[in-house]
Image (cartoon, rainbow, N blue to C red; front, side):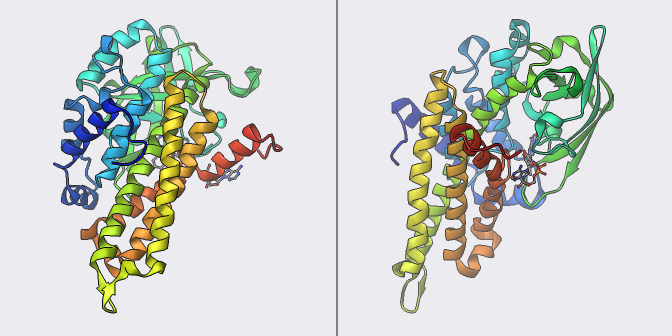
Amino acid sequence: MQDGDGDEETRAIRAGVAQLCSRFDGAYWRTCDRQRAYPQAFVEALTQAGYLAALIPEEYGGSSLGLVHAAAILEEIHKSGGNSAACHAQMYIMGTILRHGSTAQKRRWLPQIAGGEVRLQAFGVTEPTSGTDTLSLRTTAVREGDRYRVNGQKVWTSRAEHSDLMLLLARTSSREEVEKRDEGLSTFIVDMREARGNGLTIRPIRTMINHSTTEIFFDDLEVPADNLVGEEGKGFRYVLDGMNAERVLIAAECVGDARWFIETAVKYACERVVFGRPIGANQGVQFPIAKAYSQTEAAALMVRKAAMAFDSGQSIGPAANMAKYLAAEASWAAGEACLQTHGGFGFAEDYDVERKWRETRLYQVAPVSTNMILSYLGQHVLGLPRSY
Ligand SMILES: Cc1cc2nc3c(=O)[nH]c(=O)nc-3n(C[C@H](O)[C@H](O)[C@H](O)COP(=O)(O)OP(=O)(O)OC[C@H]3O[C@@H](n4cnc5c(N)ncnc54)[C@H](O)[C@@H]3O)c2cc1C
């Protein structure tokens, strides 16, 4: 048990998730990784146990839990040696529908998502030409009567092949037509089951980790106007709320990774004997692990602070960004310490260290890169001059 494990309810959730994860050991994740296979059995178990519906209100079939609890769920998965990238998006994408969707949309989709009949796992924001500069995205959605016609391309749309629904951010007004840069974008719920082959093409991208990510192409895809979330032109603001929640949840995953690395490194450092003594007796081995441990505990506190602020309705831009930054740094430091402690065996697949090391590297880049967080803090929190 660590400091910041939370109240009794959160500790019970952690225990339940840890028990579920014990059925999915290193061998399971290694096999998925080698085959670049979607961890179907794990996602089904998590769905059936209700964990992916944690944030959905009870009236729509979920558990009405908070971001604090959702963060604890994802942290435990990563601490167990697993990875929640196959399904975590449901937790933060759904927030846009919860907060900005119509009652009809919530009634239609949320109970099906909570029950596991429908997966909302795909989030179509990033484009090949705009990258981090989301406000420059070019995919268009043009209103024609009771439908929108969508044309363009997204990249890094993870889980698109394993999701029934996608939350799409597309341009409904050109940049010249809007007064403020963050206007003119709209969010849509795209039913991928109807769309595939009817204007939507999905192509997988093979990456250094098992992430089921893709590029997707829209060629005159028709989306019913009823699937517009909230008001036309306000979509960027809607997804920003969700992005802050996403940063906190990803930070929780980093804390989980860091805890796995530290526990694994400590165990190995105590067992491995070289020059007649455990390698952990050498301060050159001990100190990087101890340093990563301190970083991890500090990051965990910031994650908890940000999640609690979100749950009490406060705006969490600075806290969410700092939590993501600190936790991604901590997990990377812990990953480095763990790999180095294992020496050559750190490179052997059977130890899981190299897999987790590859996986945790992603968080320096996605969902938001370290540079972007620092420039946000520099400009918006510290009042330094704008850099872009
Ligand atoms: C495995 C994976 C899964 C992903 N899943 C999704 C998903 O499901 N949905 C989705 O929409 N997106 C997804 N992404 C996209 C991810 O959010 C972007 O990759 C990320 O935001 C960075 O964008 P980019 O790759 O275009 O980098 P770029 O914007 O091209 O930036 C490249 C580098 O330059 C740096 N940089 C750029 N501008 C500046 C500046 N002004 N100052 C300092 N540094 C700068 C960046 O920090 C970065 O390190 C995923 C990415 C990966 C790799």
